[in-house]
Amino acid sequence: MPDLPGGIPLPPHAYVPGQNARHPEDWFDEIKSSVETGMSVNALAQTQAFQAGLAYLEAGYFWECHEVLEAVWLQTPEGTSEREVVQALIQLANAQLKVRMHKPKAARRLCKMVEGHLDRLSGEDAILGQRPQNVQVMVDRVMQSLLCE
Image 1 (cartoon, one colour):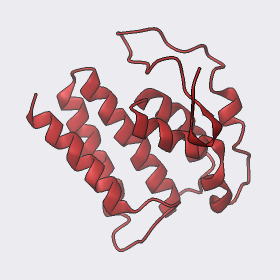
Image 2 (cartoon, one colour):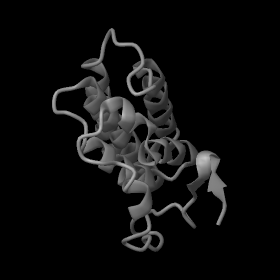
Image 3 (cartoon, helix red, strand yellow):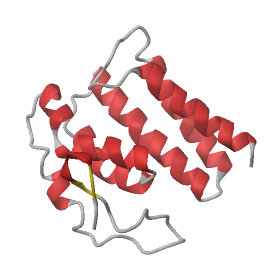
Image 4 (spheres, one colour):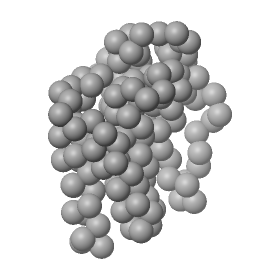
């Protein structure tokens, strides 16, 4: 099985509920174990789980992105910009998964949720290395793809 940059293992396929087989329950355990309770947000950004989430999002592994980013999100402090950006990335992955599942209404709803997270980050520069305006560009692409359906 090939790896993504940084030695991040690439799952054998992108899981799409109702269309193909789900990965074994423990497939992502090693990646998620890079996140430890009490880590600083700067340390969280360097974990294999966060880096894998970004790589999976980029590579079109949307369910997998959500799976590994959830471990990061659980360790971000409530009410912080870092928690907002991780939640935005998770919901963006979910929106893209819904597009793949031919559920445009759900995808639009999720894109609006992402925009809500981004609105709470207005005026902020990079958070965990992610610029809110770059995430907005990805949301815009998803919404544009829905116009073609």
